[in-house]
Image 1: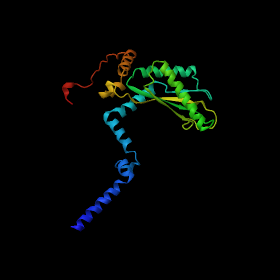
Image 2: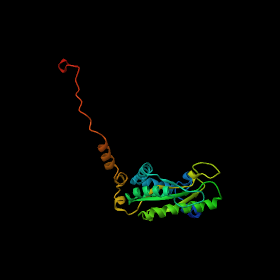
Image 3: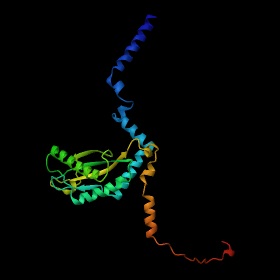
Image 4: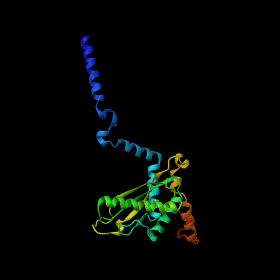
Length: 225
């Protein structure tokens, strides 16, 4: 009897020791395999199952195809040029069609200057773009927190001044939680809104009706085949 009691006490001690491991409670099962990103994968899988992930990518592709997503800046400046404002107006016209959708503006710089300075400059550029979009009637609640990559993501890897690196990029990043259409999972309806009807109307207006063609057969049907 005493031996059994000793064994039970030993097993309980081992279990309590395991529970004292910080990773026992705070880490998810499978963290050894995915280095702790299991929760992110679960969130992504949920978005895929609900249709939000694919819809976000589809709408993002449509946005990039129909609207210039990038504006450029003068050296060491965050002021918007007239060309940049024209591009942002095009972006605003697209964004207004999709009140259920979130967008984000990313700021970038060229490689001239320190990392800290360019981080701040990229943020000023992103904020300037967001402010102009807001002036065009786009609610800042749908323009997610602007992000500055500074000089870490150049388009052209040159140490000198390069206009193509001095830019902001606007992208589709997801859907507004609580919107009735999103809650009902009508992502496809959102993605293709005003797209199919417009394209069909334009194609029918531009494409002439084909002429009737008379086809003369070279084989006597009564002879069999």
